[in-house]
Image 1: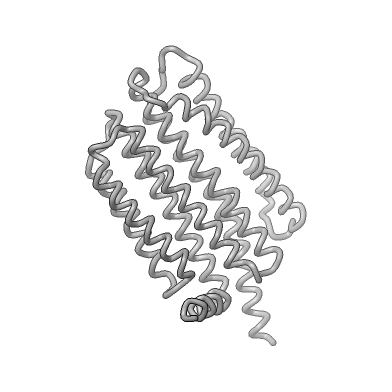
Image 2: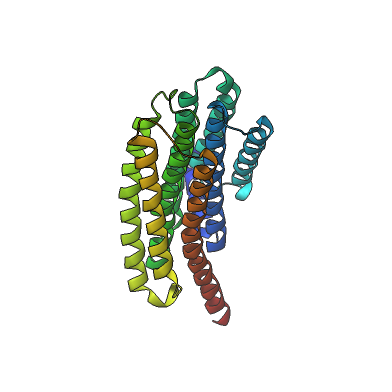
Length: 284
C-alpha cells in the first residue's frame, strides 16, 4: 500500500513539473552522456600512450561526478525507480574508476561505453514519462533529441575514442578495429534515421525551424561521412596507420559539437513553446 501511495505521489509530481524543469533535467542527462564519453575517450588515449595528463583524466572524473550530483538534485524526486537507477550508475562509475588501473584499455573503454548506453536508456525512459501528457509537438521534438540525436552523438564519440587509440598504437590493438567497424555501421544507420526525423519535423512545423537548417544539415551530413571515410581508409583498410591522433580527436570533437547544435535547435523550440503556453495561461 505504501509503495502504491509513493508511486501516486511521484506520478503527480512529474505531471506538475513545468516544461522548463523537464527540459533542464533532460539537458543534464545529455551533459552527463557527453562528459562520460569525453572521460572514456581521454582515458583510452591515456591508456594507449597518447599525450594526455593524469590531471586531465581527474578533471574529467570530477565533471562527471558533478553532473551526476546535479542530476540527483534537479528535482526532489523525479521518479523513484529512475532516481535509484541513476544512483546505481553512480556507484558503478565510482567502482569502475577505482579499478581502471588494473584493467586493460579495451575493457575500460567498453565498461564506460556500457555506462553511457545505460544513461541514454534512462534518458529515453524519462522523456517518455515527462512528455506523455504533453502536446504532439513537444512529444516529437523531445523524442528526436533523446531517441535520435543523443545516440548519434555518443556513437560519434565512440569513433573518436577508438580511432584515436588505433592512430596512437596500431600494432597493439585488441579489438579496436572490429569495434570501429561496428560503430561505423551504427553511425551511418542512426545518421540516416536522424536526417529523416528532422526533415519530417521541419516539413510539418516549418515556421518553428530556422531557415538555415537545411544548409546546416547538408554540411553536417557531409562532414560525418568524411569522418567515416577517414576511419575506413586510414584506420581500417590499411596495413600502416598514418593519421595524426590529435587531429582525428579534434575533428571528432567538432562533429560532436555540431551534433549537439541540432539538439540545441530542438531544445530552443521546446523552450519557446513553453513560454508561449505560459503567456497564454497568464493572458487567460
